[in-house]
Image (cartoon, rainbow over all chains, first blue to last red; front, side, top):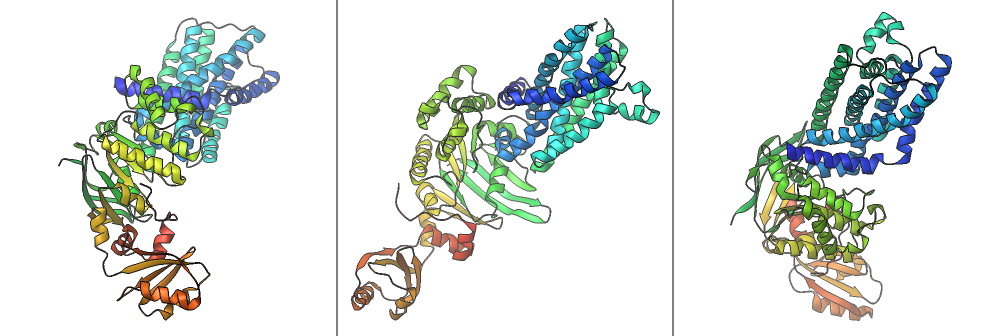
Length: 243
Length: 324
């Protein structure tokens, strides 16, 4: 277990160096959510705290999935994924390492977005630790979602299509800019199937409450279950594809 | 002699397609074993199963005493795999690629840098240690790929088409490396399109076609099985046509090969006739060689492929020359 975890961490660090530490990735991870935030903050009537929760969740979503969605498929195309597969590390731990790399990227972009927005809006954070926990767990969940999109794809444009197909509806149905409670009942039910909803809800709690609530705990558990499910589906899909 | 690999009755199907159809062979520890066959014969599928990359439909594979299906990680920890296409990270430096491989194979932290530098020296990459791989030549990338496969000092090395696409000098250096590693006790399983390469390197060869092993033997024994065919190669100092050789009675077939002709004959030796043939036409003979059956001849005979199929299935053969 420890041996596999160490190798998984090596894969994560390799992915961070190869894929993530590049300026364009940070730009993409930030650009789209910030644009959405500005559009909704001008047109909408949400409180700064609610808007910040939505913005941070979107930054984490776009940051963690943007590279992760293509990381596995691009490695499979270049042949480097086979290098990982013939090494003494199981597919499950390979995917875990890749998810760790993606989930390390999310918080960095989230902090880059959060700090200036807090300074400009004057909003305050009730419990910074809860915010950090919510960001970390959300990042991991979204990175796992990116891996799932990548596992189902044969080539990079297909992976990007799948990830956008997941991300954009989530951005509008997950409560980032339109509160879930104000949506029609059917959309409220639908939003409960989306991990972004739980991420935003957990961040809302961290922005408003100084102590963890049951809602916060449920959100974190749901995101954790979602992560495990994505990894297991990815593993099963890749195993079937590899043969 | 102990076996490094024992393959028993291996089958692999992809839907209706039977990629492997009852493959069995054993490889002695410390030997160089060649797996030859045309594209689609089942070589890559066999290697993928042996390295734990894919699961067989049925059959049993033991590698270094471990069952590959039930103990894949134990097997993977002791083998090195160099696939046909270089699989190094081009955005990373040569040294970082090696260190990453060392991490994956559990080389102790204190030894990783030392081992990486040793391999960079051995594979003549020491002057490019800190350069990212993207600027490397194909030969350098190939050497680095093999170095990465050796970082944990494996007992068994899989080399899939190691010299494909390399220039003559790089290919020769790589073959020297393979011999050196084998001399140090590493068992090598090699697939190659270059039959002369297999002839020079391998202790024994399995010829595989349509998912079945056609034969397994030493290169010399395989060549010895081709009897009854005699060939001379001749070149002249003036242009000639294939049809002109019909006037020599014992010549059965004539093929132009670049600036020379390969003549298959039966019965008596045609050398005297060829000298007369040249004299009659007022041309000089530049070279005249009598050829023994080659591994390629054995390959064609044993796999049942005709030369056209073999040319279609294989990459262009290098000129026959001894570069060992």
